Image (tube, rainbow, N blue to C red; front, top):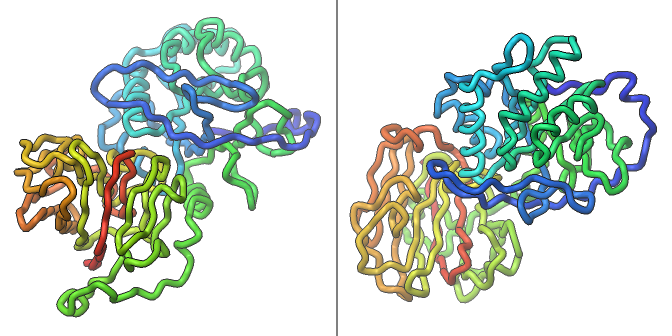
Length: 439
């Protein structure tokens, strides 16, 4: 667990805050193969992962580092934090011997699973190195810091936390074995751990422990405890303005039958008022009754609210052969939508045999039963039925998915409530007549 600073730490000289950290999502990839580790490092007063600046929004996950951790419990930890807009899980290393000199390899194997899942899901992991070392003996604590450094030295895609009045000595011992790892520490770290922004130092990155002051969020890295209040805090700070604005459903574009059945238009054909472009605002535009991809950087077009059970209907047009886009279902606020919720894959692959990343696939998980997509440049008609674990997709009047999500190990633990979103994959795509009926 992370704790508040003690009186000695609170009496440190007070300085004006200087936290200006930029957000970047990590594009590390895959859960099954071995990939090069992105390097967490500090440059010009900011935390970087690889080449991108990084803001950490983490929630501590207690009792995660254990050999019997199930795949479901691990995925649930990621989906819980992602749903509310956090982009990290924090966990505490365990498995030390009584003298601190060894760590049970089974616990390190669990760390590898956490790390690889974080990379696959485009999120991150923070490892609290000493939180479960309860001995007050300085020799045991230094032994444990060195043992952790030896065991973790190659895991450069994680950030490491060392707290306490002896953190400077422990950080030095840890980094003597793992010089490439980035450490956030009370004293002596690459990154400062603070619980008050007054302790932030100019040109020194910091992570706020415990809570986020009112009115601050965007550039402040933080680690919050695993409490309902923490999830509420991230949810509140991550919400888009449109979510709290009044909305009068526009029936324009509905058939009389759809209106009678309770469908509403998510896109009115005139403007983007019911949507949020989460990246570059001109990446997607409303034009001639269509939502059109215009330029890279839009990232995704997010619905104004979450949906759990629904019938979604829309038309889409992929403009070029090999073009790539997707429809995110039950998507989280943060991190990889296709690995937390689901992605219905959209490709320019007319006439090709289906696979698990072609049109109609539940991306990377289940191939479509057939590929009835029309030639590139023509409008395709799509209906998605989602009700609990039942997912059915009908493309151009042909059923291409009819699944019980609970029958798939990975999909069983994905989010069952989330946003509808249109994907920016840097390829021209258009959407129109987007309407939904909640079940």
